[in-house]
Length: 113
Length: 114
Image (tube, rainbow over the protein chains, first blue to last red):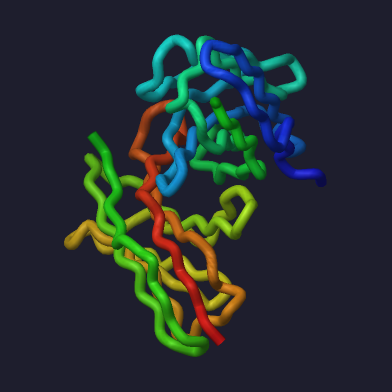
């Protein structure tokens, strides 16, 4: 079992650009959640996808959008990048029903210059 | 809204010392509580969890007890090792609802010296 995988590992962008991050969930999982972890801080919930729909959203602007594909993998898109978007972006997968554990991927480190 | 507060680090200990990292929470209802660990350059790993009052979660020598009366979930280990050096996050998942969104504390860096 490969666990949760994310790509790319690192990414450098400039202000105003757009970025797409990718996540493949753990085998058997149908739900993907995205978190932003700024340096020295705890992860902050961005949104969660299940059945290809956004089910819940945290306090993030519309510049942050996502998508889930039929194979349960997911993308996080960020438009009009700001310096403050520099962070580690974590993907977590789980089963939607029940109180199930979330398994985290290694993250994508995004640097905005 | 729901929130988690944990002690600031860094916490520096000698090998075989006793560890306590304090965590308190604010939430309505009966949240589930978690401790996650993040090793350098890696993502988060679930260390232990408790889903109801008075439950004790334990794993790899670490323990934490869900205390509803004090809204606390302090992490303890009797004898730390150098390999325990990492950042530890306390987190909660709210009660009910159709999501399992996690709310994290700011993390506590633990450095264990030989």
